[in-house]
Length: 265
Image (tube, rainbow, N blue to C red; front, side, top):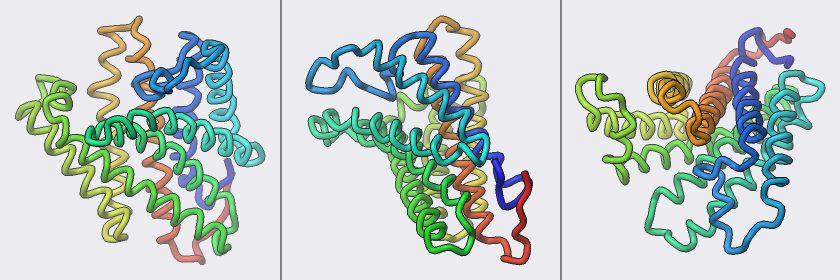
């Protein structure tokens, strides 16, 4: 994809690879990643669920590939934004039925974060000084910041469950990191929303998500290589890492002086 600097498109590539990974997992298992895409929560039996799962997986794969190039990126981003928004809607029955459970809100906003990241990437394809680019980038960044705040709060509503995901060998202990990563999410969300240290905050958020994938999800592939949830979890984490990365790239790009703007393939 063409972008304003030689490195500012790296996040969009990772974001696209996350969609490719989700698509491949869906094609192998022939089902939705129901922990994150809870189609089973809908108040009716979805007809032809397996066929829909294959269709969604193929769309994720195709769209993830499409956004690697500027010419096909707008179409790919539109598909990803729509799919992730639909996956967020899968959470609505749980949000409405159990509004007191913060995990339902967190699950919905996780998918929304992936959807709004598509808007942020789209803004990078527009002329930098255009009103549309500024509006899309700002809307996407602020929406993503709200989602990150929700991620942080979800840690404190489920400390035992979060702590259980931390490898036991990581010092000082699992509970410490469950709380610490919750705080780090909150700080990153505040930074993105306020514009104070937002480049640093979004970069560190990206690093934290990448480390979470390397320390938690990747080892699970070796321990449970046949588990659909493990492969889907790795793919979702990669997509979220890419989403945080594109937001960080967008913030950094809008901090650069106009004179430094250039285009590179």
